[in-house]
Length: 85
Image 1 (cartoon, rainbow, N blue to C red):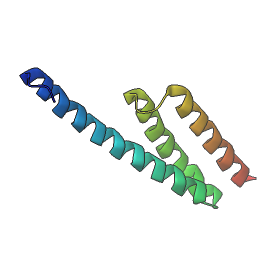
Image 2 (tube, rainbow, N blue to C red):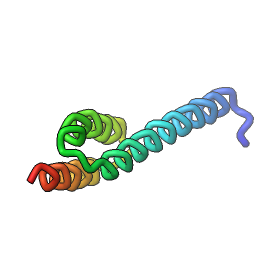
Image 3 (cartoon, rainbow, N blue to C red):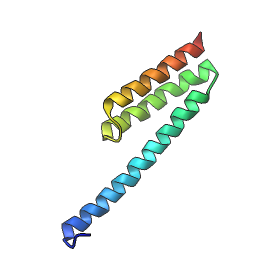
Image 4 (cartoon, rainbow, N blue to C red):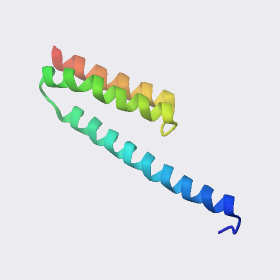
């Protein structure tokens, strides 16, 4: 570990960001898992915008790539639409 004051601060900041990103990522993965488990079309339709918003926030923060976010949202929307039929 470095001995410079600024480097020590950077290590603290990056650790804080990493923990925060892990929390948001895990929370979003759990929400995606719960949405995939839903079999009721109405409930899935209500949950989809919230989960899509969480995915967008991860992409905006750089936790996941924007194309991965788009793929996840597309697959979830397709699944919810098949439930409606």
